[in-house]
Image 1: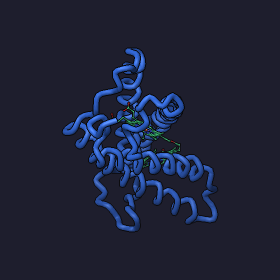
Image 2: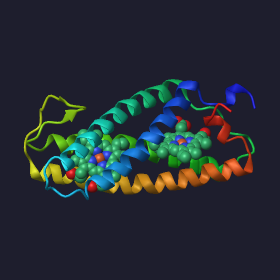
Image 3: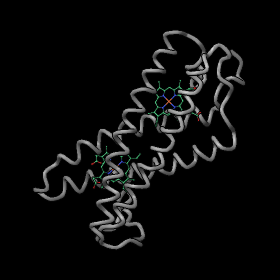
Image 4: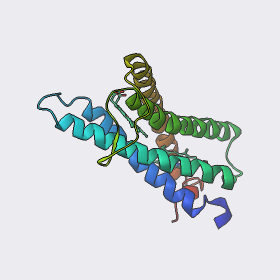
Length: 177
Ligand code: HEM
Ligand code: HEM
């Protein structure tokens, strides 16, 4: 396999960094909402960690999208059937959509409360206002989007394992070995 059939080094690093970050972020998200409100502090601590990691991921995702739009994707192996090409395009598009919606809905929802967002301890400018209705809409979007996101990730990872076992060159596109 020649190098031109691989994603660029930057795209590969961003893919794995974001993949690990998102999986970790989802684990924190589901765990933190179970933390009781008293004693005060523990729940807020994990919510702040979740918000800080989520905003960092949002910035990495923006960088990744700019990189993708300016560098494109390498051509898929010629042997790949048409339906798999279509499925890959559709699912990758869906993954990108979720990667945008998750940090955005989280950030907007957190802006429509009376509490400012703390980014790893630093208070961010608070432009929003206390609106339970807007906050609720954003929370619903965040919740539905993460269900769609997890479903797409399950399909994506299953497809990756299938290609890895088939040794058809797809896995090498996103790895350096
Ligand atoms: C163990 C986990 C994962 C494996 C083994 C894996 C594997 C792969 C492989 C082999 C490709 C190249 C596919 C191709 O070129 O057609 C790819 C691309 C991609 N992966 Fe993953 N992936 C994983 C996790 C994730 C996660 C968690 C996300 C979402 C945050 C993600 C998002 C994407 C996207 C959007 C692409 C398309 C890249 C593009 O064309 O711009 N992956 N992945
Ligand atoms: C890739 C980015 C993100 C992922 C994958 C993610 C994932 C999750 C998950 C799995 C939950 C638990 C399910 C739920 O209640 O919706 C959750 C809840 C939550 N997330 Fe995120 N999140 C991300 C980014 C953010 C950001 C950037 C913020 C705020 C700045 C944020 C704020 C919240 C809040 C406040 C909750 C508690 C439930 C609510 O009030 O809506 N998230 N997130």
